[in-house]
Length: 77
Length: 245
Image (cartoon, rainbow over all chains, first blue to last red; front, side, top):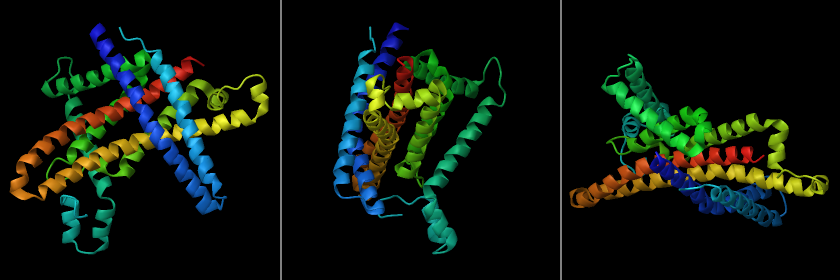
């Protein structure tokens, strides 16, 4: 049973940490898409694109920090 | 059908019926037809397995119970005893995604998960359920407090910081289904495309085709597992933020 718990703990850790690269790629992408939508459909000024990409990147960093905090609480014996 | 795909039952039927409305309908809903086929197949298997629910199970019931308890152990191993209430949902997703991934390896079939609309729909189901679970646990006020980064004291009155945090948290919540769905779709689509290209080499490319077929079968299982694992971790992240609240 402790071996099983260790395996599940490692899986959880791996799952959490594998979220990070995905987040760092998809958040600025989402920001880009949102910025493009705002400019094309709602006629926002072009600098909104940079703001939304920046917001996406900030969101990714924020989530990365919270994931690392949660991952560091996992104890694997 | 494009040139880099094997013909399927649906595309053959569409070809036979010419350029009629039925043919267009078949081609438009191809992925949905295959995913419905999987749903019917799983319902049928479940019905057969649980038709005679006995204390001393038969072979079929035994296999179904082994799969069910394995999934339960895996989810509760990650989420703790709290995960018990999410086991039916996450277990269903695992079996459904696994069968859809494997369907593309059969002749004249296609993996519905190679279509982004299918994977996005599943990821959105996970997203909605996670938000519902968080909303139920925290309540309306607590949920928005969590999204605004739990502002207290002077930060609460500044209004700007909670608003920025709210936007950032909303973006992070929206990223998760996007990354989950893109990951699954891209992997399965890549496998199917590679097999179709190698199939085009004919008999001379058979060894390479066979090798990649085995790899695709392994990848189908691994991708279903990873999708479920990430969905489970997604729940774990929400539950942990609830417990620290």
